[in-house]
Amino acid sequence: MVMRRGHGFGDWMWQRLTAGTMAVYSVVVLIYWLVSPPIGFDGWKVWCSPIPFRTLSLLFFWALMYHAWLGVREIMMDYVHHQVLRLRLEWLVRVVLVIYALWATWIVWSI
Image 1 (cartoon, rainbow, N blue to C red):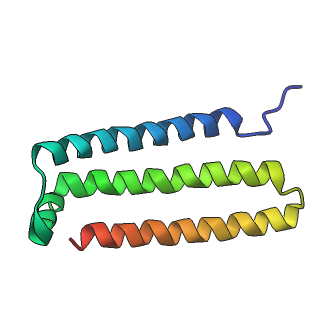
Image 2: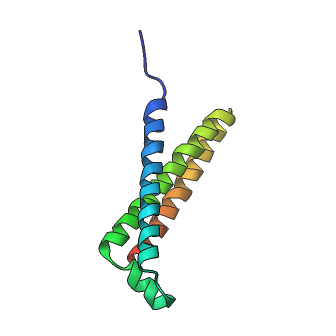
Image 3: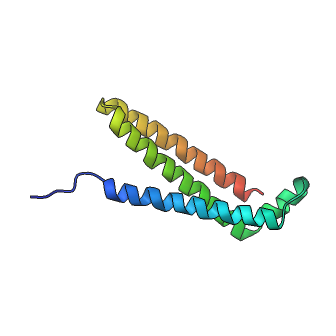
């Protein structure tokens, strides 16, 4: 009987999808910056305030957090052999990444 025990392929696909999302965002923002560079604080605020820019920025940060989670979890699964320690470390990383995601959301929407 064949059983699927790991998440290997799905995790690999999500890692590539989040990397692609971040790459596309980075290229779009770079082009936007080259075409219309903001000058001064007020310029940056106006530049970052449109809803599409905020939405794409949130998508970028959430993709970054999930990408980081997948990578750190894989590393811990490979190198932290004590199961209880690994689960506690995974929980800690998850909490920190959720806090970072909420913080990024607050920053992006408070512009």
